[in-house]
Image (cartoon, rainbow, N blue to C red; front, side, top):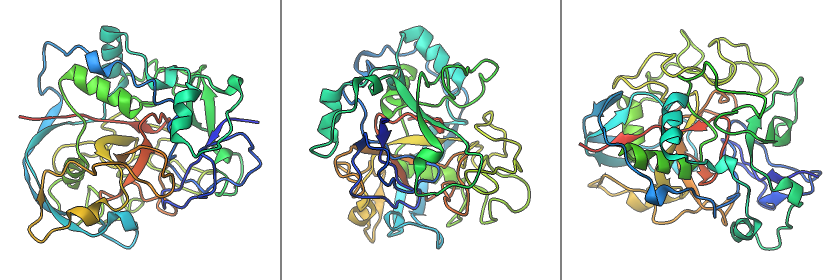
Amino acid sequence: MALSATVTSCKQKSDKKAAAVQVDTTKKKSALCCESNLPARFPGLKGPAGNMPEMNNKSHKDMVFIKGGGFAMGGDNKQASPDEYPKHKVTVTGFWMDVTEVTNAQFAEFVKATNYITTAERKPDWEELKKQVPPGTPKPDESLLVAASLIFKQPGQAVNLNDYSQWWAWEKGADWKHPQGPKSSIKDKENYPVVHISWFDAQAYCKWAGKRLPTEAEWEWAARGGLQNNIYPWGNEAVDQGAAKANSWQGDFPAKNTLRDKFFGASPTASFKANGYGLYDMAGNVWEWCSDYYNNTYYQTINRPAGVTDPQGAAKSFDPDEPYAQKRVIRGGSFLCNDSYCSGYRVARRMKSTEDSGMEHLGFRCVADR
């Protein structure tokens, strides 16, 4: 018996009959690659973002200004999923963007100043949790309702990719300070991206820093780095051709990583070449939160001949795989993405997670207006 979550693959396949919280681990679990679409675990614990103090010394340090412009947003190649279409005309206004993902050192400064407690460090509230899972979902044992987060555990052999529990595990005590569980730490990893960050946590940090999360359109415009209709931030060359371009999984997932890029898990920020706008890790390393609600048909609603300016995302969340869960868009892929099953590092790739999701490969970066 173990608390588990419905997860879907980066190809967005899922077992639609699976309960969002399961206590029978013998049931078939849906295939997963590098991203987990978790049910809302404890929406009642959103953190004190509403009264978060702001920094007195707001600046554009460690940010780059992204000039506004227009582009064709959406899928660029045959790997594109249905929710990346139709490709549509978008214009964005200029904005400032963090050069890298928010680091452990930066997040530690925020926590020290505010005493903020992240979602992963809080005990779930079943009365709140059950509002966002299918009716009739059984309550897990109280021993399972503990502060925890998802960590990657590499199996020693090839496994059935339909069973995510072979490589993902809820780990009690896993959080931003202990990214692989309670015995791990971020000592000497100050310049690594902070992870196990929920959307609520990212929002709280942004408010304190006088910034905000990027919209999905801003994120994709920035990730393209000035290139038009290219697949990746660096162009169209496949991720495993030529020099290492991003922190991703090389080899057979999840049992073998050849370490061609020299990293097994997350890498220090700016370990790979920046894109045309001077932004690092817009592909790979860790997934990044956007401000937008995820809705699988959103692009259809804003596809107009004249285009749309500064789209803010869907009015409400909807994921047909988990219709009860409220989700936000995440972008950029992670160190677990591999071209054979997950092309998360494509600039047009859309993924989604519930607002309270915390995972070993999920972080964020901020933007700011002029």
